[in-house]
Structures are given as C-alpha cells and as structure tokens.
Image 1 (cartoon, rainbow, N blue to C red):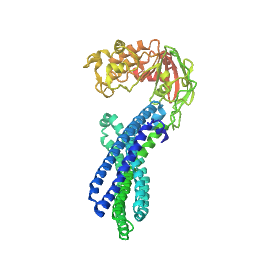
Image 2: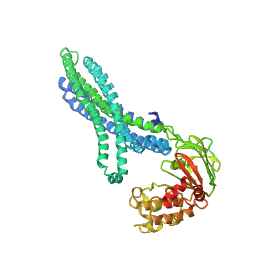
Image 3: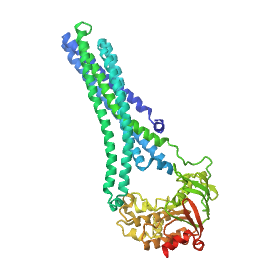
Length: 570
C-alpha cells in the first residue's frame, strides 16, 4: 500500500471539504427523525397544529441540507479518486519505462496492461465509493447508536445482540471474497495472455488448422475464471439476503421492545418513532458498509498487484559513479562476459571476449539459440551481465546512464515497431529537431522514398496500428530509414533485411553499406550474403564464440562457418 500512496500527492483541502460536507450530510440525516418525533409530539399529542407546518418546513430544510452535503461529498470523492488513478497510472508507466528485460519477463506484457488499466480502475472505483460511503457509514452508525441510547435505551439491547452477528458474518465474507478476488485477477491475466498470443499468431494458427486447439486452451482458462467468479458471486449474493433477515429481525425486536416500553410509560410514542428511524439509519449504514465490503476484495487484490510492480527492485539502474560520455569513438569491448536468464539452469553466454574497433563491421552468426540477440541485449543494457565487462571507448557501460549509452546506437530489428502517426513523424522519431529534408534524404538512402511517394498523402500518410496498412517489407524499409535519420555513431542490425524481397534487399544492402561507413556496426544475420564483407565475423554456438575472422579467413579455416556458407551457396 505504501508503494502506491507514497507516489500520490493528495491535496489536504479536498479532505477538509470532504469531512465538512460529510458532517453536514449526517446532521441532515439524523435531524429528520428528531423533527419527525417532535411533529408527532406537538401536532398529535399536544394538538398544536400550528407547529406542524413549521416543523414540516424544518424537515424540508434538513432534507435539502443532507442532499447538498451528499452531492458535494460525491463530487469531491470522485475528484480525489480520479486524480489518484491518474497519478497511479503515471507511476506505473514511469516504473515500467525503467524496467530491464528481467522485470518485463517476470510480469509479462498482458499482466502489465491489466495492472495499468483494469487494476487501477478497480482502485479508483473503490476509493471513490470508500471516501463517499465508507466514511459516511461509520459516522452514521455511531450517530445512530448514540441517538438510540438517548431516545430509548431499552431498544439498544436488540442492537447489542444483532450487530455482532452482522459484523462477524461480514468479516467471514470479506476474508473469503479476498481469496476469490486474487484468484480472479491471476486468471484474468492468463486469459489476456492467451488471447494476446492468439491474436498475434492468428495466421500461424489458421495455417496449421489449430483453431480448435486454441479454442480449447482459451475455453479451459475462461471456464476456470467463470467457476471462481460464480463462487464469489454466490458468496456476495448471499450476503444481502442474510443482512435483510437480520434487518427484519432487528426491526421486529426494536418495535416489540419499544412498544412494551411505551405501554409501561418508559418512553413516549414520538420517542419510539424517532428510535425506530435511528435504528433504520444504523441498518442503512450497515448496508453501505456491506456495499464497500463487496468492492474491497477486488480492490485489495488490485492494490497488491499494483504494489508488486511499483515495489519491485529494478535490476539495472544508473550507477552513482556515472561517468559523462562525450560523442562515442566506437570501440566496443566484451571482456569475459557471462550471462544467464533468471532461473536458467545454464548460462546463455560464457566468457565472451572480443573487440570491435571504430568503424568496424562485426557480424554475428550462428544457429537459433546461439546467443546472438542476447549479446546485443547486453550491449544495450536491456539485461545486466553476471560476470565480466562491456566497455565502450574504455568505459564500463554500467558506469554510463542508460539514456546516454543508448543514444549512441541506432537499431533496426527483425520485428518492426512503428507508432500510429504519419510516416514523417515516424522517420523523425529517433532524432530531435531533424528537418523534413533530412528525413526524406534518409528515406531515399533506405530505398523507401519511392514507395512512400505512391501512398495517399505521401509522407503525411497516417500509419495505423504498427503500420498495418502497409506491407511487412515496407515497414522494414521505414525502420531502416528511421535509423539512418537518427545518424547514430554505432549501429545494431538484427536480421534487418529478413522481411524484404531479394531486389529490395540488394537496394538496402547498398544503402546500409553507405550508412555503416565510419560507424561501428553489429550485424546479426542468417543470410550470409549480407555479412560477407564484414570486417569481423563471430560464429557462435551454444553461448560460445567458436570461430573469429573475416570471410576469407573463415573459409580458409574450413570449419563451421565454411560449412554453413557452402550449404547456402554451393
């Protein structure tokens, strides 16, 4: 809880006004039975008819007072809850932005989305209702109990018997419902994860005719969610009928005990009427408390899940001994680097050592799972190494700020990412203050200009979700153009030409050759034709560098690289 509220700034004036209007609302609610009793006493018992309309006017005023008080309490509560949700969402967004690969892997995309949206909304709803009703209910109950004792002490004995029963029952319901709510949130995460996987892989699923398999997988988890939800609903649904029974018995007991007290002359009829109204206020307060309790388990589960995200220690942070980095020269050194993913039995990389000199193109090849992409992830500090050092121009990357380090690199990945906006906005994304002419020049270098000009609106064309309204190859061309526009000192190209045809690949290769001139570049590729001219080629296998050299040297070695090359071209 502290993880959440420490990040939210509440304005004290809102709570001062909230409490003030709560008192006004309670004063209006509790004054009404008193005026009603007085009307019976003066108008009926004493036959003072002139007092009836005067008291009726007073009753109208207190009703309006309670109405205004409750309306303003609702307004202020809603404002506090809305601002709270805004601040929590921002805190979650900022926290996730700081996550390394370890934390992202731990929670998963679907769970983080649910926690930032659904869980925050649950907390907002609970806070709004809690401030409005949760604060009103105990104050109303306390006022009602005091007034019952003052106006007719005999009837309070009924409450002494029934109220503990209600409180015990509501506590049991609260404990059980909290367990169900936690299970529901975890199962909802699983539903979202499965649904997201199905949406992302729908073409593959259809290609292999696995619709029924995925339908069964989703259906099983969906049924599990429904079963837990039914149990929770039965529990919460049974609470209100139980409360109604206790209410009925309480009312019967109050009227019976009160009527006997009137018959014995201990209290007046008007006092009994007021007393019964005060009991109704107490019972109404209990109903409000029950309403809040129905929200609490879900809100508590959401609060715990949000607290997990905000409270987790980020594995990769900027060090206290951070060193300022001027424009990079481009020397990158891996020195005895070892790395393993969380809970992995074996290291993914083992004692990796090599140096890339300024302007040098280093190609990294190997079978799937060899550790190629992991190597790049460590260079960018998406993950933290277990042992060894990664140096840029002789400075350990752990002594640089992540922003400073990453600003020196341009990246083009196999999986393209484009945001919803114009083509021009996407090209300008990687570099501040870049002109339209510079962005267009970058597009021309990447062989993207010709296809952009054929689009409706040209560079002003709005790309839909991740560029879904253009082809995969065109999306790849735009990401390459974006990297060129950023004009980085160093480059990372991870299967950058894997999603384009042979002709386009040739165009891109020429453009990339120009781009890589004078820049330290790391190229991951399966097509060996794209890295044949690299200065250094690293052949990786199961986390080790097995062979190092340029193309001619490795062919002369007649080892694993030569075998792979011959399999592709001979």
